Amino acid sequence: MKAEINPMMMTQSSSKKTEPQGSLCRHAKGHTAAWLGGVALTGAFASTAYALAMLPGFNRMGPMAIALIAALFFRQFAGYPAFLRPGIHFSSKQLLRLAIILFGLKLNMMVLLEQGAGLLLQAAATILFSVLFTLLLAHKLKADMPLSLLLGIGTGICGAAAIAAVSPILKARGEDTAASVGLVALVGTIAALAYTALLPLLPLTAEQYGIWAGISLHEIAHVALAAEPAGQDAVALALLAKLSRVFLLVPVSFILMAIMNRRHREMAASPQEMKTRPEFPWFLLGFIALSLFGSMTAGTPLELPARALSSMSTITTILLTMAMVGLGLNVNLRELRSRALRPLLAMTITSVLLSVLSLLLIMWR
Image: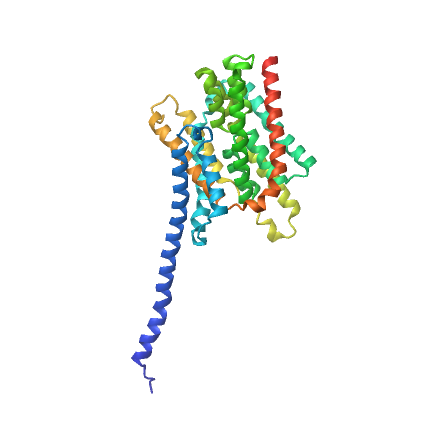
C-alpha cells in the first residue's frame, strides 16, 4: 500500500525551502549595499579633500593629510554606522594596494640608473639612518616599537606610500598605519615649510638645495613644495633624489619579508602555525611591473601620453586618499594618544638630524 502524499504538506515543505533562499538573497543585496555605502563614504571624503587641497593654505598639506585628519575627527565625534564597515575595510586594504601598484608609474628606473650609484648610495644611507636611529631613540624613550618602525620607514623612504607598502608585510594594526601616515604628513609639512624659509639664508646653489630637499624630506609632495621656490632645475634634481629613495622601497620590502618569515619560523610552536606564515606582498610585483613598463617604454611608441600619465597620477592620489580615509575611520584617538607621543618625538629628532647631516654633507662636498 502506497503512502498518500498530502499536497498541503508539499506546499508547506517547498515554502520552507524557498524562504531561506529569499532571505539569503536579501542578505546578499544588503551586504552589497553596505559595501558600496562604505566605499562611497571614503570616496566622498577623498573627493572633498582633493578639492580642498587645491585651495591656498590647504595645498601645503595635500589631500591625503586633509582626508586622514578629517576622517579621524569624524570617527571621534560623529562615528559611522557599523554596517558600512566592509566597504571602509575594502578601501583601507584593497584600494591601498591598487594605489601602490599604480604608484609604480611614477618611478623611472632607467633615469636613476643613468645617474650612477651616487644617488642610490645616498638614498640607502638615508633609509638606514632613519630606520635605525628612530628605533634606537624609541628604545631609549621606551616608545611603542611597531609604530616607531613604521615612522622610521616613512621618514626614510617616501612617507605614506612606503608605510602603506610595508604595513601588510609587518602585519601592522590599522590604527598604527593611520597614525604613522598622519604623523609623517604633519612633520613633513612643517619641515617643507621650514626649508622654504631657510632657502634665502643657505649658502647653496639651486641644484644643491634641490638634492638636499630630495634626499631628506618625507613625501614627494613635500619635496616638490620645498624645491619649487628654487626653480625648475632644483625641482628636477629634488624629485630625482627622492625617486632614488622610492626605488629602494622594493628591496627594503623584500628584506622585511625575509625577516618576518624567519621570525615566524622561530616563533611557530606547531606545524599548523608554520603554514600561516606572513602573506607575500603580491601588489609589490605589480608596482615593479608598472615601474619597468614606464621605464622601458619611455621615448618609444608604447610610451603613455602625458595626459594619460597625469590622469593615472590623479587616480593614484584619489585611491591613496580613499585608503587614508578608511584607515582614519577605524582609529580610536583616545586609545592611540598615549602610545603615539614618544614615537612622534623619536621621529621628529631623527628628521631634524637627517636634515642637518645631509645639509652638512652637501656643503662639505
